[in-house]
Length: 93
Length: 509
Image (cartoon, rainbow over all chains, first blue to last red):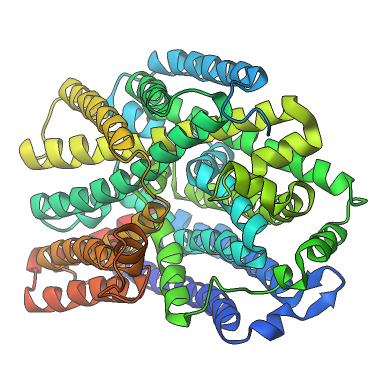
């Protein structure tokens, strides 16, 4: 493998790891934040946002939506920049 | 359900149609299953959308459909904590696991851990963890199947367990991964559409407004049902369970194996997107099914049939759609169990034959015909084991076993996978120690937990305070892997790291 390819792969690999780690930490923060609220502030989560909808149910649904959004962010990056770089590296192989 | 325990003809009819269709698929798949690559990985020909549905089918067990609907019906908001916990593992699978797995491995997750390490010690440890996860998961599914089918179809428990074992055996033995994949797809479509129809029939009564349904449930059982109750009283317990659910998904062998069925890493990525969309949608529906059962069926009626609340969704189906719809939902629940059991058996068979036989006993060089023969032998062995375990655990409280399977998967498999892919100093001894300590510590702490000691053995106290060991065992497994690797440097593994990185991103073919 040429030095040039090696350094591109190294940069790409570092970028992938950085994004994966950040998104993983974001998911953990959102989910465990929700769990800690359930454990420590039950009255707050029992508050009504609308008739029939408690803050806990709203935040719980938003945790699911967050999972979708984080995946969408990752896929957008991976299908774009990441796959383009991978394709160019494969061509040179 | 006045006729609970007596045969429901519509349910039996739907069930026979399902079995006939899936066996026809198996017959079609069997003619295409001629090599180990077909048997374990469906010839790597599955599309991203198909694999997304199949992943959802493998993941949405009867426990999530019947169990969570029942939990929400009986305890309101608290049941939703599980719905959410079961979904948040999927982003982790996407960011850290799916693509490296596809690019580095062939049939099992141990391929990835062993990529730059010595094969025998790593594969023995990985097979140990895999078989522990698969066995506990199988027990939970088989006991669930026996109880469910007794209630819905009026068959005896033992008969139900044997039928599930034999039909599943037919799928896996003859049709391999191709048949198993299509069984998962058919099941996922049935489960998603059945749950969706049921939710729509419930909402129809509330002018298609979910909030009106939640309001009506709160009017009947008190405002408290919409807010947190007693389920999460100890924060450490909640975090421990959350960690096991989140990282366990990324270590379940039957889920990981699905990433080998697609042609490349990009398709693996697409399949996680579809799977997460389907699974998230399904868990959002459980909000409606659970509160619908609470409001329309009522807690007393649910508890009268089954103390665990598992019959909430079928009872709801009968209340809003009549006996015919009940039959359909019952057949869907049966199909759900069959499909999950098939996926588990295939991944257990791969650990026995691909990891232990081919790579440890035969040192990596076994002829194609022999690989296929051993894989089929292992499948028969596991099917018999699942029938025996199902009958042996009859009448036991096995609800904790799915949690246990997730805890072992999160502690034994996930740390080793991540360290093998992303941490250069990871050594053979480190991997071995991490997987064995992860499995054994999870098993030991569960045996000492309040669930087993107090609820099952009837003791007054438990030596370990948490119901789920994840909070201790996941960090422990990472720490053991790191410390042992630093103490036992592995120059060959270190030298192979750049090659692993290249293949992790660029693929091998």
